[in-house]
Length: 168
View 1 (tube, helix red, strand yellow):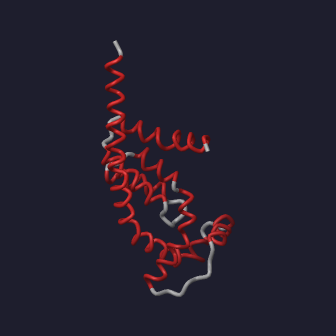
View 2 (tube, rainbow, N blue to C red):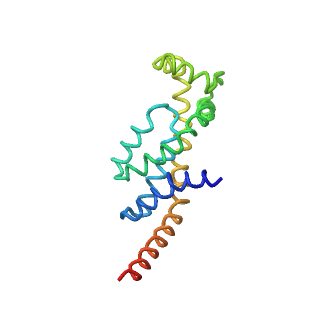
View 3 (tube, rainbow, N blue to C red):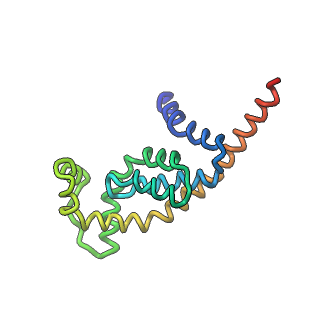
């Protein structure tokens, strides 16, 4: 358990705290992390890093923070692919296509472009399902993280002030 905690601390907590120390506001950081999470589960494999770059540039967000969370939630992209397809099928009243993540991954590995011809409609339905979930999820993550990041900034500032008072 200690190794797991140190990994999370090293790969998630420290980078976020460092960004706060460097002057990024809790609001901008929360928005960067929220968009990184939401874009990271986008159901079109291989596009999330590019989408993060575009969104970070459009909204003047922190590129490191948005890519960090994109990277961390990457496994969820595979886990949520089929649920997003099913949601899209429901939205459009389409009959469910019998498919699995393993089936899609196998075709993608052998013939990457063939994925779009074989599963194009399903991928579009998955994107539609993601669009329904994306905005509320981004807002939920943002409003959940904002108070935590504000508190972390206060603690970081208090620790820095205490260290400055001790130094001669």
